[in-house]
Figure 1 (cartoon, rainbow, N blue to C red):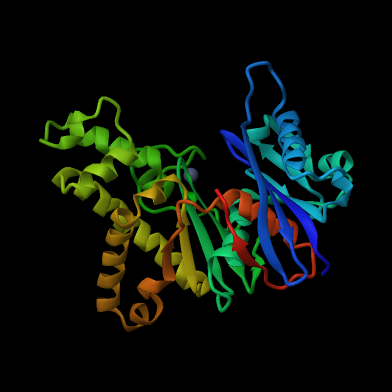
Figure 2 (tube, protein in one colour; figure 1 turned 90 degrees about the horizontal axis):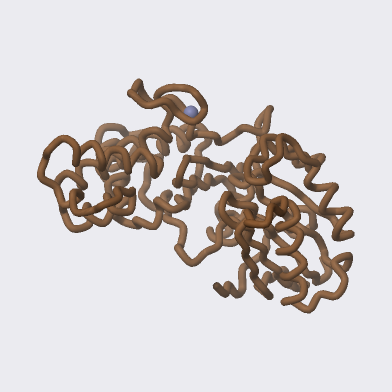
Length: 336
Ligand SMILES: [Zn+2]
């Protein structure tokens, strides 16, 4: 592959992030410029127009005069994505039911554009840029407002028959009294996502139990982790409960796909070891019970995504790279 500039665009619910990188002949990828903007404007601009503005601005920052000179653009976007056509359905962040996002950006910028579901893009980015080269099978699990995951098997995104592979947020865990955003009951994300942890914090405060969580005028998952870190017994219990359910869900992923690594990202992952330790404790219990678990659930298979790594934007860069003949790119510089 000859050297070239590539762009990655991450279309999030709050912001559009765009990253311009230089990819050398030695297969090294270096950040050139980064730009971000809120996806919703007060003057009624369409989100897609804001996406285009962000890329225009990024190219000015990187002194790229002609976008047709780009090697390609990769896009990560939530929704049902057909990577072959660039069509996005249920594109909630773009306020569209359906959009031919790939062809639209190709016509505007005059270079190849590849579109991928955001969870898949993030997983591909982790495969390229975060884990060591011996890893061929991994999942990136995003814990935030919801729970999503992308799967990389044999170094490639695993889409499944309906491009829905890895949607573990809606995997059934057990009956509870919460209805999930998908309409079902008992989904994983109603146990371990941000709103679930917040709800558990509110519940313990309402129960009359003594807890430092009562000092918060507004409850949040972050508050629960902060107080768990300070050993508030009620907060520790919540975090342990979340950790146990998450540990079993991740065990399910490992046993289904024989993964070498699971990277945990998203807002909840900022809790770091406060989140990871209860998961590892449950895995330890499982290893003690089972020879198979002892073989499969080694702690090194779990990794918290570094907080400074822009998982969405680098994921989109990895999508752009996937159209080239590049086998494995190494991340050289990453500037915030
Ligand atoms: Zn659900």
